Image (cartoon, rainbow, N blue to C red; front, top):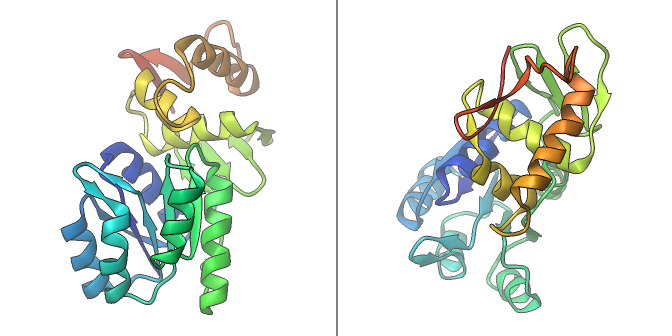
Length: 223
């Protein structure tokens, strides 16, 4: 079952695609309107996740053209949370509207609800990489053979993007944007506190972290 993700932010698009793939969907990625329209017509996805800020393009202008090419439910995912944008998006053909920052659990639940209304739904599967298994439904993280630990919503967002990076460091700026939403919502001190709390849950010795490590101006998960 195909989900089309339309977002000009390469890293966020990759995170969303990774989440959908691990939840049992085939993720299609488009960075601009032309690619989105071509993929929608050719691949006929089961659902579309559309950002409104596509560089020089406005997703609200793309939305009617996208609707002409697919009957699939369209969920707008955007930092633009004003009532005007939401009403206009729904009037132009969107089926749902979710503002950033968002919970991966909520996003997947919204997509499943849209697919149920459309008559289809893919199975839920946890995100997994190396020893890490993250259940987006229960917000539980298991590392190796250890029992799962319960995460807060912010911890869930942090772990999700780090698992998606598959061991590569993720910059503090990117983490701030993904965890808290638009730039300026969080700060480096809040991020450090969040990392500290997460280390208390997953490290053998939180004072000497081996799994969640500081690296290259950001953080990375190690196997």
